[in-house]
View 1: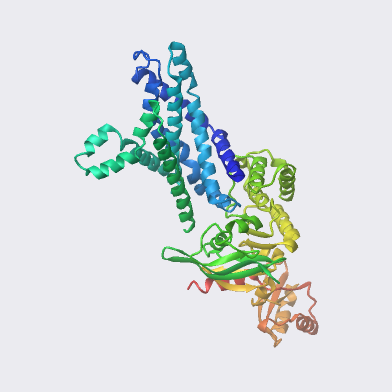
View 2: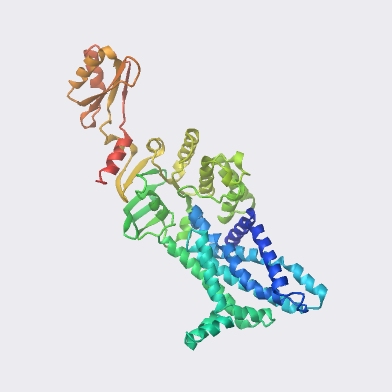
Length: 244
Length: 317
């Protein structure tokens, strides 16, 4: 446990040791703001809630979360430090979990910096802050899913660009499976069973439910399982690469 | 003496290529094993397997009795490892990096500080403690890697090219450090600097194309060379002919080689013995009989570089 936190702390510090963290946070906030206010018609809707923000969030995450995870393992492999890390007296799961937690904490920091929006809607009206809180929890869980996928993809290669592209592709697949457009499009091509299975592993439907304030245990278990599965895959990939 | 590092029939295949083929070796406490071989011979791959970073295709390694496949954590606790190229996190300062290593190794509070201080002292890093590692020269980076490997005072040290990129003073310093620690530990170093093997290693293992081709003390290896016990005399040019004739007449001398690169008006004559037998006495006597007074006379131990070339090249054909 302690070793895991030591790993996590170093990883988190590594984000802020370079301008990457600041560039990421600024771009994230600017894009999210722009989407929410202009595309999302934040003011014209006349409603005191953050629905437009949380509606755009998955798509922004889709592009930006892989940028957080791409260096996690790929950079270690490229610079050779993975050899150092894996010959230190820690279990593999401690390294995998430590890196993931650092990335998750970083994503949570970026998300937390959207707090002026919460203040804004509270000044302009009387929003249901319970729903907003639930939506933030949903966003954190969604970020966790994307991060877990991204971390596993990063373990596959020593090239950060490849890690990024693979992660975007994988996250995209797990996001769009549930969206009505894709379901309608695929309904003719795929048998109902496959479609149903695809809908079940999709993230967006469950995320939408949570952002509307519907927090079901089933969905929480799903997110936890999803993250767990990808972290396990991450460990398997690292172990498999050790076999050369 | 009980072996602290044991490699048992290590094999590593990458696809169709066998990078390491049946490498077995044992290193006891107090030994410094020099791992020699041309680039790509499988030195680093073997060390990676012993350190538990690469999984062997076959065979295993044991450190202080712990099997690297069955008890990886126990192995990693007793091991100090300097990987190939001495990788470190470039964005960290030397101090932060070593402190992190100490924290991962489970040291806390006062002891952690003491451990870091000791490692800094051993690797002479005091002047660059608060520099980011990426700003350091190659030699300093190597020493940061070395400090990291020594931090927990491990029983077993595996150092992949510990002196690569260091200047001669730093090399001497690292060698002195290794020699000082040697009695307490079992050490493997890889290198292709042969003088290093003679200077610090108690044993040399030569590997070529993934296989061990020699496992002997540096002196034994040198004895295999035709220059072993070769006796070189430096004489004045005027006396060279007489001296050479006298040396050639000796039955124990196989051949005499001549070099004029020793100074103006001087000639160096090297008498190579038959079967490596000592010939110094015979050479002195022969020169005295020929009334030649040598300016210098010295005996060679054998040329390791030639032994190395013989061992590693003949299999390539």
